[in-house]
Image 1 (cartoon, rainbow over the protein chains, first blue to last red):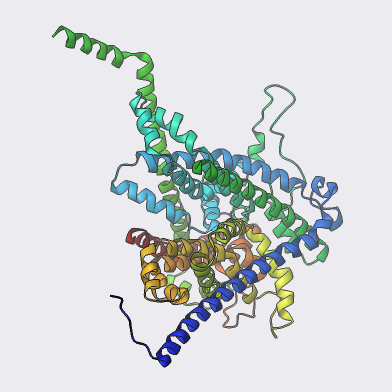
Image 2 (image 1 turned 60 degrees about the horizontal axis):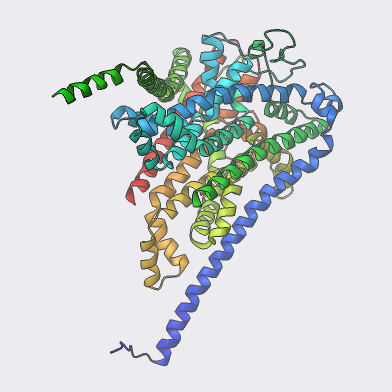
Length: 313
Length: 312
């Protein structure tokens, strides 16, 4: 026996109208969603286009190999990109092992107790601390208390602290995705905990971890505020000591103690000047910075994409 | 009996095997090292609090707290020095408030659209793009605000000065959008499918379902997204330092320029700050205020976010 609800024509019409109204609501909101999306995307496109339009003509070999100058047409970003490269080197060298270690501990070792909870809450809080506060931390402790001065080493350290939460969180996510069967079989053939971690867990989590480190570095490369706060100079017309030397012992760590500037600071400095010619230089620096961060993120997304495909098959 | 003793001796041999012994030792040592890495994060927080409090202590020994909170002028390097945080604080909240006024409707619409309306393919392409946008250096946003949007906006908004709070606030709103959308969309997607199916079975449209089922169910997560976004906007530095001017100004008009807390710290750091002077300690006092504000929002956001994770 079927349930037949008796319906008059007026009721039929009313329910059809209701259905139409519902459908209309959906269409309207879908359109609103698309409009918002297009609006935001076009604003961001405007940002990129404006920057590229202003700056692309200024990027040439001279711009990359000249030091900053009082005359806009002769100024370049040589010291800035060398500084950025060296600072990133220090940051990666510090943030990767510390962040991976902390992530590994929290995911695999941490016992369920109050102290582990504190570390966990603390990491997510650190992720929300404004970057300029890290700058104040470095200014107070590294620069003055430890007397290290505004050097490349301090710049790298403060950026490493800044991206530590990013590396920790992505390491944990990558490790969580490692199937537990892998760990159990490794224990089954007699590995101890560290052997399981080092030979099985970390290698399987490698793509995710590398992605996290790259995303962290791409954030660090654009950071300006903490580097300004530690007192990095804006006008540097010399290069730090080269890390690689022609004479034994071939490597040299004097560059760590060198004053420096980085690309975002150079850009900020040029924006703050009134002459429009310097604004062109700022735009050119911005294009370079944008290209660097987008390239790094592109690599990270590519690795993640390949990882996802590998997991599917 | 004989057999077990052999096994026991084998066991002893295994225990004393130098190779295995080294492995066990390494494992214990590594556990300690990894713990040290994790504990470092706590040390960083402790160091931040210690630096801010100890340097502010020097400041508050010379400037009474009441004057700090009620004085309406902030002129630490003038001969007639005033140390009232209010101008910096109002500018900070103006800029962050404008950012939220932009980011709240756009963020809600975008996250509902992405989580409930968009096809999976579109979502999968858009999310990485949004993540990439979150990585655009803030100094680039500052350039955009000062040299592109401000001249543009001045043609439409009368009385808008070259440095103002309106445009950087707007740009910050766009800037924190990817971050907010990413968290609140996660929260919405964590709502179990059965709730959606129930709503559809009652004959709801997608729009009604989003409004009456998804948003209430994901409420704590969505709120957390906006609180965390607000904390970001409050702590954001370069956009306001570039486009909002560096002049402490207690104003109720966002068309004027005014220095925020972060812009003040940047401005002072650019100059030559003699270590140990009162001017030097002002940036730490300002930093402490900033830290406390963002901490409050972050902690509330953290617990709300944790709640939505536990709910389903």
